[in-house]
Length: 476
Length: 96
Image 1 (tube, rainbow over the protein chains, first blue to last red):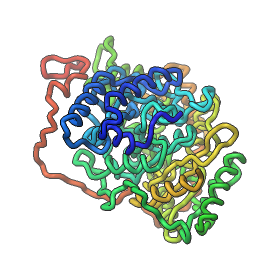
Image 2: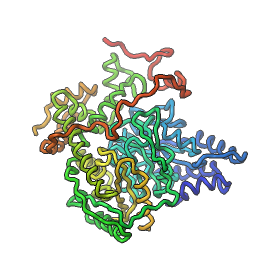
Image 3: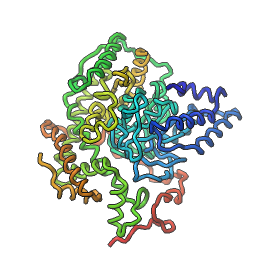
Image 4: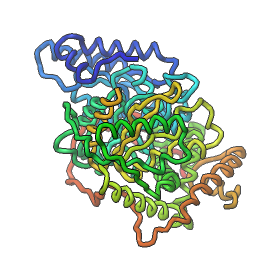
């Protein structure tokens, strides 16, 4: 469903008068309306988008210089604080919440002239891998409406696949950008931990949360990262960006002679044979281009999911403790005492997955269990980090699948939370280790898209993007 | 691992300020037990000589100048989502 050219071409077309910002916004709003059945969008930012588009068009008419994304519409996951519509994180807790300020990422994109036209659906508070945990409705996969779009950034991935806007933003705590991108057949980038400010994004797990773009091609992801990345006074975990920037501008790496490691643990028994076939073909493509393919074993990888499902609920339970119903968010008007107001507001405002994670997190952090669960998990995390660092001494990048199978049927995993958690098994490691990772469309298993995952060392986002872009060129 | 007891679930719910229905208590007893059983994988991992990692990019003690930066957000804007207000105050229920 191609409705847009590359982001750069779209911005050029606006700047040189081939089209206008207003025409782009209207086109996007119309497409959103025509595709409501997929459940990708929670709310539309209509008035503000039109106003901003008119302002940009007026600047151009006056011959003023405009930004690199002037007049390009985009869609933000509904856990980004934005003006012009509610920010709900797809939760009943934040229904009706009007942000008093915007996320740094949104501000940076707006400063370059991009226009946020809508907010995308997600698993409530980004808890999930299928968008079925949204407190509002399920997002359907554009390739097959009976299947999930993935999650938690499922609305963002479906929106880009449907061509509702040239790009969308997601957040990735354990695979929430890469998994839906893989399920929907688009590009999803999880940058190095700390590279993009998280100020103004609803916090899930602070030691693994990152923000990134979902796009139709790698060059677009690179351009959006280039604009969003860098240190921010409002997020003290941010790091400096690459002095070379991230925009590709035709940059090439020399695949010939490059060492690429295939992650052995991800290619084992649990992988669907059809997905395995696509990934094996991708490996052949790298080989034909002259890359040296080596098998890499990261023996602690099978423990990564267990580490993740201790560390993340622990941080979730801490981050969600702020929702007490007093300053913002759902408030039980019938509560008699302050204590009752806390308890009722939280019990009514949180859905069952948020409650489940709060309960697990509270358990693993509680006195008597802290050392056995939380501290142990964070120590196994160190082991995992060491294994990744060692492997990157001998390879330039690691590759493997994004998920063990293609997008599953809606409802297929709903009755068993553990089964649902297993979908993250190949994506969580990059978050625990903090390395950049990307999902790029690599082929089809049956009629459903399969993504190839590429990971690079921390802060090598530029190299990762260049390599991904070359793979994209080779597979076309 | 044995199943979490009803009392343990209720204690966690109390600590997290959540009120659970009887059905929820039973559901979480089952689900939390199976999740905790799964994470028991880590018991057999040898981590001798390793320290825990809480922050992956190696930053420590990031500080900034103690000065006011005006982001152009008014007090009124910041208070607009407060459920119950009295003037510029947030009004809460009685404490006891």
